[in-house]
Image (tube, rainbow, N blue to C red; front, side, top):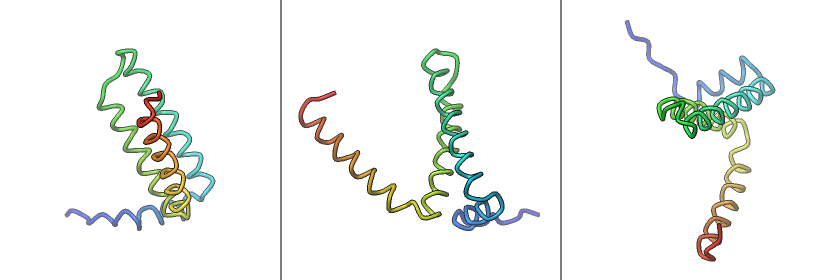
Amino acid sequence: MVKKMMNKNELYRKALQRYGADAQLAKLAEEASELSAAVIRNLLCQGDERAMAEEIADIEIMIEQHRQNGMGQLIDFFKQQKLERLNQLLKDGGI
């Protein structure tokens, strides 16, 4: 018998409830470190895109959890600022 999976928001809420906010922040840092290592391995031709994609998925899940836990507007604010900065750099011919 196949159990139906909870929707993402319910999963995120239950993860936060079970592990706590501090543990989820630590998990975000851990996943970011693992992504960094996977990117370096890929650049050095010692890894592959599948490993990188797996770590990116982990990061996206952790970011979605933090969005749901009240950081969504702040993340969007800074994301918009950074996109505007990138747009300006591209217009100006900058790096």
